Amino acid sequence: MPRWPNAARRPCNDRHAQRPSRHRQLRGHLRCHRAVHMAHVGQGSPECPQRATGGTAVDLSPREAVPTAVGKPRKRPWLAVGVLVAVLAGAGVLVFKFLTNAVDYYCNVDEIGVKDGCDVGRSIRIQGVVDQGSVTGEGLNFVISYNGQSMPVVVGSKPTGIFSECVPVVVSGKVVENADGRVFEGREVIVKHDNQYDAENADRLAQGEAEAAACLRKD
Image (tube, rainbow, N blue to C red; front, side, top):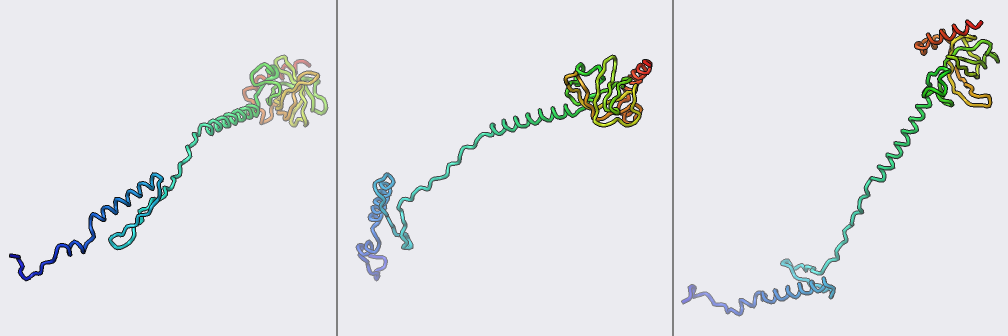
């Protein structure tokens, strides 16, 4: 006897007719996935629109893959580093040569061409005593001697102060070679007893005094 005797029994066929067959849905999905698979291997590109729960069609057609940008391989900076090192090395050599040439070495007349730094053509300061009877051209030409060696001097302007014969001097310039031999082309003449001479040549004053005394004894 039924639990609810008054309830009307509904045929089973009616219940199954109100909902779609689950087997049909599965077969539809299988056909769609098979078509998508065939499209991927190059045998077509069928569309398989399906109805979602809300009634919206879902597009299951394959999408074209967007190629990703491949970054360029980074270049090693060894070449740039090598160029930078070469440039710095060249600049260092130039600076060294400039500073070396810019320094005025103190040299006695007898040290020209003998002592390191007292080379011909290099900017130096040469010390000696003005020889007797050697001053000509209003002081523009004279000869200085030291320790038995002599050097002709040519300057561009007349020396100032107490410049005279048998006086120790320091001349700035360089030694050059000409047809008559070596000549010292002077830029500036500093005379003994000048304040600048005393300050810059304190260790050479005694030597200069001895040479000057020897020059005076030649009278």
